Amino acid sequence: MQNLKLDYSKTLNFIRKDDIFVFKNEIKRHIDALYNKTGKGSDFLGWLNLPSSISENELIDIQNTANDLKEKCEVVVVIGIGGSYLGSKAVIDALSDNFTQLKERKNPLIVFAGQNIGEDYLTELREMLSTRKWGIVVISKSGTTTEPAIAFRLLKADLEAKYEKAEAVKRIVAITDAKKGALRILSNQEGYKTFVIPDDVGGRFSILTPVGLLPIAISGFDITKLVKGSVDMEKQTGKGVDFENNPAAIYAATRNALLNKGKGIEIMANYNPKLHYFAEWWKQLYGESEGKEGKGIFPASVNFTSDLHSMGQYIQEGQRNLFETVLSITSPNKKVYITENEANLDGLNYIAGKRVNEVNKMAELGTMLAHVDGGVPNIRIEIPVLNEYYLGQLIYFYEIGCAISGYILGVNPFDQPGVEAYKKNMFALLEKPGFEEETKAHKAKL
Ligand code: PA5
Image 1 (cartoon, rainbow, N blue to C red):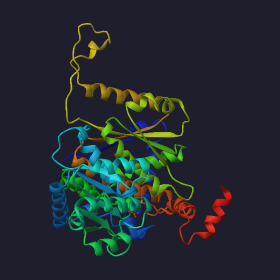
Image 2: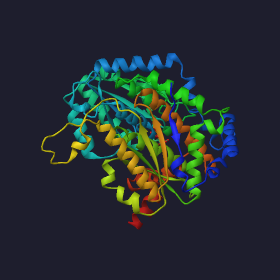
Image 3: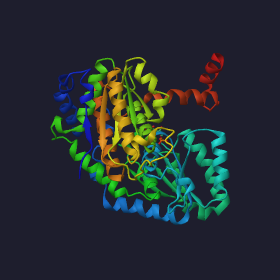
Image 4: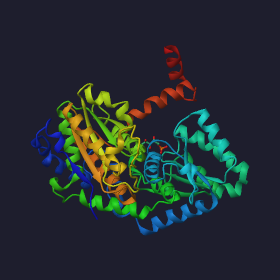
């Protein structure tokens, strides 16, 4: 099977090849540190060999649970935030029909909750669910995160009101810590089917655990192929692989070489709207892993060509502190040809007979040339088609690339101490018991 390709040639007007290859020995040390568990955050390296260590039995258990919910439900609500929802959302959106909500479906529609605290969102969700057959997958590693806890409290009550307790229990699956946290205690009390998020896998690295795999399987996508893609990328980026042949090492080196030349913002660009949430997943992975101690490359994203008509101006001519990483798909899964038109008022007959994809590709190449000329280096990552296998490759490629890049920056890529700041303030302002001092201090500031 072909591998994803990485092309850094369009960065070479800005950095030299040596600026990339200077990281070769350092990256070898970082990969050794990852495999030997001697680097920062070494308690959170469970994701490193996850693809090759997932057993067939685990995959069968996940698939059987998915099949059970598929039989019972038209809609499954996945409750979770951050790493507990972005991975499955990214893969499901990438693989789904753009208009899946309006078309006849074989598999339940996955909708998300607990990823925001919007009252309108929750109300509209509950209204929609009241007329559907539905179930819940609730995901929280800590089991104490406020947003999913609020959503679960409300939706659990709705489900029990609709189906009676015993049937509601069969429609709820919980994915959480093996032993700790409120969700684990509740699941044991109520008798929910549960899956475990391993202790050594952080939320944003959990897509290849049941956190990502169960919702993806419920949507009808092939988790075996997804895992196979990630296994192949694990081999391609592992300990004994030369720097030159390791795309994740080259990616980490190139983005850090660009950072050293003042390019502190990386924009992931795609030319397929199905990849919008893949970029959101990537933003969390890189933002939460690298953005600490005053360091890190700021991850941003655009959907082209849509955003060429909004953000295109800034990228072309704004501050020159950007670089772009284009996520490119060689062939779409469907074909559309541009038709001839006698009046030709729109002047498009010169491209009649061509595929729409050819226009998209020329937009991609034209944009790359324009942005490079305008001072924005481009990295290009290409996969042949958008399917489970290549998404599996991309996921693992970005995960290990992130770990290496974080080590180059000198940070612990596996913690997220900064996420606690807003939580403490929110608890204080909500007058949570135990936060009395902070409540007084914050209220005085407002
Ligand atoms: O990457 C992370 O660890 C975070 O984004 C978490 O996934 C997020 O905060 C949700 O946490 P939990 O699954 O504990 O509810």
